[in-house]
Amino acid sequence: MKGNINKLIDLFRKSAGSKSSIEDFHDWLIDNDQAEVKEETLRQLWEEPNSISKEDSLVAYNSFKEKYLPKQSNNKRLIVWRYAAAIVALICISTAYIFTQKPDVDVVFVENYSSVGKVNTIELPDGSVVTTNSTSILVYPEDFGKTNRTIYLTGEANFKVKKNEKVPFIVKSKDFAVTALGTEFNVASYPNDNFYKTTLIQGSIKIENPEADVERILAVNEQFSYNRETSQYSILETNVDDVTAWQRGELVFREATIADIVKVLERRYEVVFHNNSKNKDVYNFRFQDDAPLEKVLEVVKNVAENFKYKLVNDICYIY
Image (cartoon, rainbow, N blue to C red):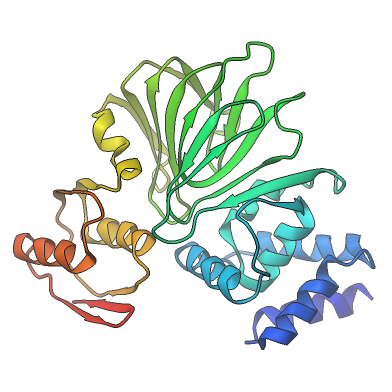
């Protein structure tokens, strides 16, 4: 039986199933029958070298949610491992790192997803307020605030934390955990970005990663920046207005390459980019509230060398 399940999941993830076959496969995958074998197979799939493309994962997840998940509100109940496991098998979603330590399958979680170009504001059960940037995923227990305040983030979010000294507020992402008692801070942890960044706006926070032997306390206006490629980090004073610009609909780029800019634009606008630019220079740009994509591209073209673009419907070619 285990061998057959392995073959079935491997075959399905390598094929392009129809909508009905994907729905049938999803129902089978989250069914209780042979649940342990299915989950172990998915765990092995996640750990398989080069099996998951971080560059494509969020795009695939967006497409999957639009095409195959039932239409419903942003907040929904889910059994976290089985839900995540199903998404991993179908589209190799990179956010599955949240669930690599299998939780109690009876724990009910709430997920909030911000679609492309959208910013969501959520009031948590404990009174804390979270604003999530586009293509961000926020997951937390349905009973959040009663005995724990641990929340999981993929993407970017701003947190205004309700003070509760007895129950610390913890934000976990792929690289680090941020702990706060009552404060405001911003976390940027998109899986396809080279850097993880946390910025303290007011109060005090602790950033830690025991595996990397990192534990630091930030002061107000300081930004912790971790390079995922080199595993090096820095703490520098930053411009909070730039960090929070996305909440006002603005686009701010500081020391950004064309590749960095394209990643942000793809999250902001409903456009798929094909970037073939060889330009490795870095640039600073600031665009006001909800600037049209073509205006942004024209400004970049006028400033950057060796940058041309062609916009065809919802596809942008950069060369």
